[in-house]
Each structure stands twice: as structure tokens, then as C-alpha cells.
Length: 355
Image 1: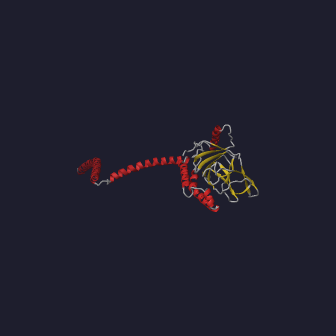
Image 2: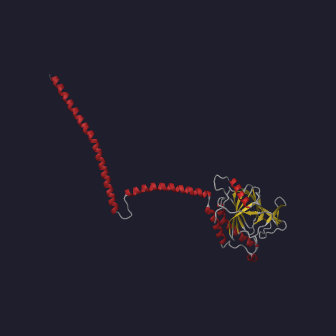
Image 3: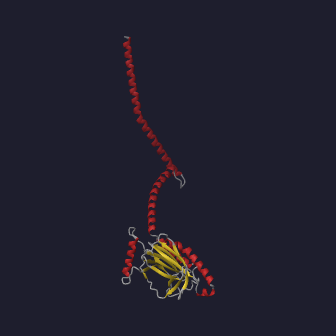
């Protein structure tokens, strides 16, 4: 009897414990969502209080000061906007750079401006004239001329180096168009103008800019053709190859008297340089008044830029004289003046940038 009673009491205890556990566990599980909601409500309340404090601080703060939250928010906006602007600016810069690579409009303007300033400079403005020739020795005039040439080089040579074929209308506008086909189309344009006298073996020129103090020109020379030996009296000439390649030979008078250009009978001269210039090396050749006789032979179809300071004066003292070269010995040459040179250079319409 006692054993049965004990089993009944034990069973009742077990049932009570099970009911207790069920109630406790259920209560705990039902409390968890409530606690989470309370925590979220507390966090929201704290954020609202913080925002109210910030607004109070902003209203009480001196002008120019702002809350940390406002600064942080604006900084984030600026960073986002800055990233977008940087991307836009980078796009614009790359587009501008690409455009400048194709066409440098300022280069030609800067060259013209540099020429104007150089010619207006008191130290190089006035070349040796008749009055100064009679009142100074040849050595003094030559020294002044060398100083003028040196200053011209320092002022103009960097600007000449920047000019490309595109600035002066001697390159294809479309990247797909090959230079060779463009040069052919250029000659076709000339042929249309000079239908009666046109020859693919002729030399053509364009006047880019000209005034009484200087002149900028381009010369288009087909392959195998040349500008024969000629002089540039009292002139400084800067030359740059814009397209193709050429052989340039420069001479000077052996007696050193560069002021006198006549050679009615064979006159001794010296070879100063014999070089090949190309459009790839971007070099600038300088023809000074002392070494002012040269010839240009086109190895390929050629376009060359010349800056004359001052320009030719056909009816004055700076007329162009052509010469015939004779080799006397291995390194001994003479020049003989050609009275009526058969060489012709035909003018072309300038299609490049306008100044």
C-alpha cells in the first residue's frame, strides 16, 4: 500500500514540474519580443533626443558653426557630389586633352604674338641700315647681328616647335584618313585651281600670316622635288618639318661677307650643314643671316613651315637670289648667281587656323 502511495505522489510531482516548466518557458518565450520592442523604442527615443539637442545647439550656436551631425551629413553629400563632379571633370579634361592633341589653336596665336613682341623689342627691332653701315665696322655689325639672332632664337624657337600640320590645315581632319591620301587630295585641290599650269612636280606655298616685320608660310613639296639653292638676305629663318622628310644643305660665303649677296662670277662658299629633317623629331632649323644660303630636297612628300624675320622684299634690299652650285674640289664649292631662275612656287589658298 505504501509503495502504491509513493508512486502516486511521485507521479503528481512530475506532473506539477512539467506544468511549471511549460508555464515558465512559455512566459520567457513570450517576453522576448516585448524586450526587443522596448529596446528599439529606447533607441529611437535617444535618437530623437539627440536630434532635438542638435537643433537646440544649432539655434544657439554663433553664425558659421554647425552641429557635427549636420557637418557629417553635408560632408557625405559633398563626397558623393565630388565623386560625380570629378568623374565629369576627368571626362572633360580627357576630351580637352584629346582635342588639344589633335589641334592646338593657341600654338599659332602664341607664335604670332611672340613674333610681334620680338620685332617690337628695342634690342632687335631695327636691323642694320645704310646709316649704321657707314658709321660702324663690319665686325661691330656682325656682332649685333649675332646678338639679334640669338634673341630671336630664344623668343621664337619654342613656339615654332609647337606647330603641327593640323594647325595650318595640312593634315587629315579625320583620323581614319591616311596622310598619303590627304596629300594626294591636297594636290588635287591645287590642280583644280591651276588647271593649265599644274604639275605634280611643282612646289606650292601658303601664307599663314604676314606683316611688314615677319611672315609665316608653309611649303608643299612633292617627293623628289626641291627648292633650289637660294638666300635670305638680312633675315633669320626658322624651319620645321610638318609632314614627311627632307634633306637640307646650308652654305655660307667663304669670305664671310654675308652682307653682299651677289655672285656674278663663281664665288667660294663653305658647306655648313647637310642634315635630314623629319616630322617625327620636332626639331627646328635656324638659318641665320651669316649662314643664309640653303636648298631643301623632298625625300618624301613634304610639308615644311617657315618663319621669316623680316620677310622677303622683292622690290627692295631683301630680294631672293638663286644660285648654281659647283664643286671645285672635295670640300671646295663655288656659287654662281642665276639671273632668271626657272624655279616657280605657286600660291595656295590657306585652309588652316585664322589669326
